Image (cartoon, rainbow, N blue to C red; front, side, top):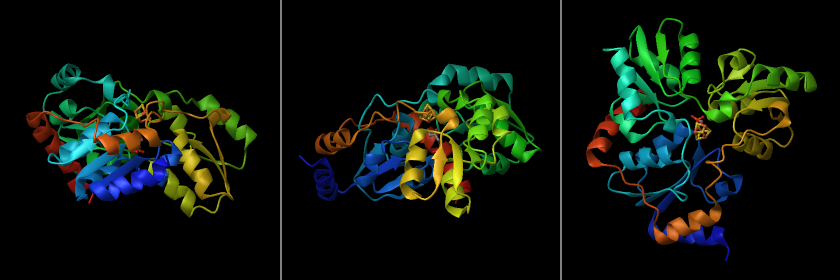
Length: 302
Ligand code: 13P
Ligand code: SF4
């Protein structure tokens, strides 16, 4: 069976849309309607008129799409696709963190569970984190779960104290400054582009720091020909495909792979569409509270 053709047919038949994060296996792009970073995909999820949303991404992304579309069927092709960073903070840990700093507004990265979002003031993605923290007009904010993104935002703004929770993305957090130095010595003409989920000492050595979309746009608008790209392999795969005349290198020539992001396959997507499962559900009360946190972000990001 040709899964690609079958998926296209089922999409039309069932009025379904496929959203795919740039960290997904690249062959998924062939069947996806929207491909992008977390912010773009949440914006597309908010305005789709499809009856079924297939989210080729990880659990918190599909959960966010469901919260934005309570009456639609939202399907995550492989239910095992979680996010290690989102799992680093649960409701009890969030409450303990908030209790230490009463009356300080709380920003949660979109990489968090619905329960956590339900008790935070506003959420953000790596594309809009600076804008979101700024929008609160508070001298202090709590930021979770990603300490690295929080530190980076604090540094960019300069006038807000960002109190970070001790979470991180294991994939980005393991990239270290020695890795940049060694790779730079191998490719001295290459610019270093890094995701803000990397540690501060690493980001200090980068030529550009930005989200998935930020990195892709940087390459698009740059006349440079060589780039060391410090983020998940999916971004490099797409850059290599889209810019065959430019060269892209991994830190230490070793791809950074989020195994969870790679769990969804084209076959899983076919099965998901065919069976309309596995469906994501969110407790109604939690969903209503989490929706406020997500909608505030979308409003600020307009
Ligand atoms: P962005 O899509 O905001 O760049 O985030 C990267 C990420 O780690 C998603 O899980
Ligand atoms: Fe989570 Fe990191 Fe994987 Fe993104 S790359 S889904 S933050 S573990």
